[in-house]
Amino acid sequence: MKDVNNLLNPTFPRAQAFSTLIMKSLEGLKRYHLIMTAYESGLFESTVTSKTCKELAQQLGYHEIMTQLFCDALTEVGLLIKEDNTYVNSPLTHNYLCRSSLRCMSNTLENIKTNAKHWNQLPTILRDGPIPQNRQDFFNDKWLCSIAEWAEAGSVFSTMKVVASHLNVNRWRRLLDIGGGHGLYAIAFTALNAELE
Image (cartoon, rainbow, N blue to C red; front, side, top):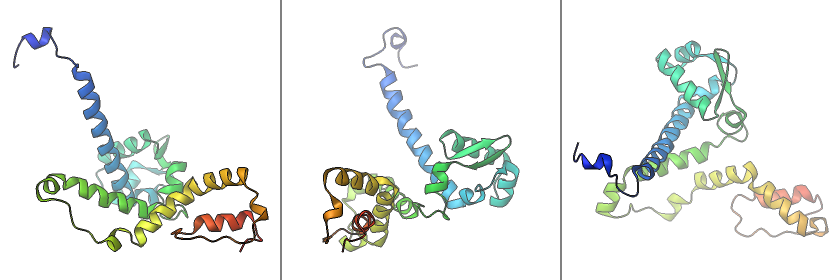
């Protein structure tokens, strides 16, 4: 103990604000590692159908008790559903984290992993300066596919809903998409209007 008076006269702001900040930071880090470890290990492919911890541990080469704690943590964040003694993917996982899903966010996860590596290098970057990167290395196919994954997951739908509520898309005959990248908005407009070129 540094000073007994601290027990009777705590400083302002109280340590609760600091504790909340630190715990939220740690919570984000834990969730990141939960998601990435489960995705990269292939756990979500194994839990397309219900599996026990013992079955998962054997399939993945994991320690059985640690596998149960791992699966319980994934259940707590909403990525698995526990049914009796088995685990199965939640709808969120089925849609976005299963490699077999047409909506799998694989490119997004790769970009997040790269971004996390850069954050791990923060002390070096602060000391030595930014990491040089070519524009074409950053704005590459994976980056474009990642944006397309998010667009397909809902932003195209939301945009089409707003546009269709304000404009008569069925009157259009031609659409010019300049620099749209993935082209999903143009594709969605042609889905709304089959006459659109």
